Amino acid sequence: MGIPLEYLPRLEEIKDKCLYGSDYPDIGVKGIKENLREFLQIKISKEAITKIAQTNPKNFFKPLSYTR
Image (tube, rainbow, N blue to C red; front, side, top):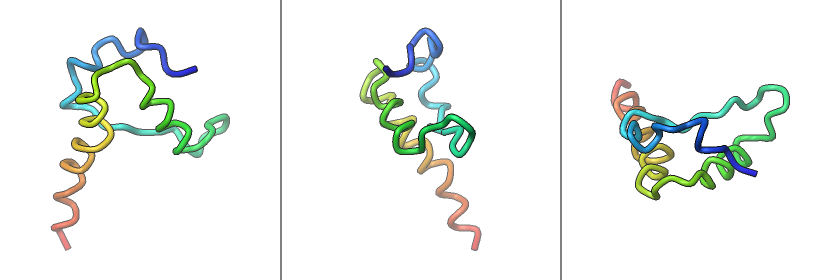
């Protein structure tokens, strides 16, 4: 199935400002694992997927770990 790219037309353009997220545990949401698998099927560059699902979240949340 997958997410149609027409819902996310500028995703490549704004990949440096995006974080992957999920609506889980909302009604009708399959689960985080299934949502991530669906996201990984979007027809965008591997660079964009890596930034959105790995690099950007690590950079965003990393400073929080140093506040203790």
